[in-house]
Length: 206
Image (tube, rainbow, N blue to C red):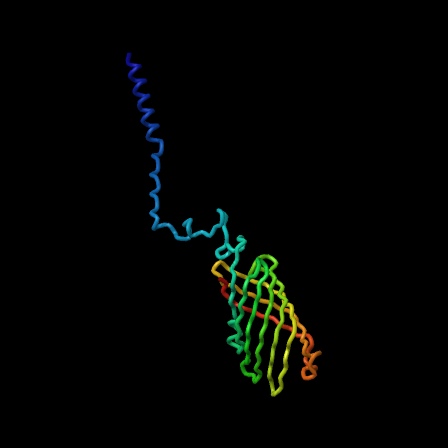
């Protein structure tokens, strides 16, 4: 009759040893308070569009809508004695009308001049974004060393435009034109018939 209590004692001892061998569960991590979360990891601080990640400032690339007006100038030219401003208006989704006024008196030079230009930039992708071709015309007068030259004629520029969601943008263009004055005026017959022109502008669209 003593064998039964002995077996029960052994069974209880084995159960106790097994319970001691099992590791105790680790405590659950304490949740972080919202104030402790890094701002860069917050959902409202991540730039997305329809649930997809988008580079900050690049939402406009995925929208059909665009800014209507754009005013710009060349801040580098201001330091060198070239002063000008340009204003563009979007007449369609891909075509704008642009006008600019310029006056220049280069540093360390006695030359002075002025220029009036008009153009119709045609954007291949969307307004104020990407590659464009710009037919237009200019009227330019320059005085240097007591002589005056005048350029009147058409020009065609090829350029590229960058714009961000804030409305700030930059454009650069380069091309050639033809001076009609060399054929129509004996006074300017010796001027170059073909001329090179271009611009670099920083602007704000609204």
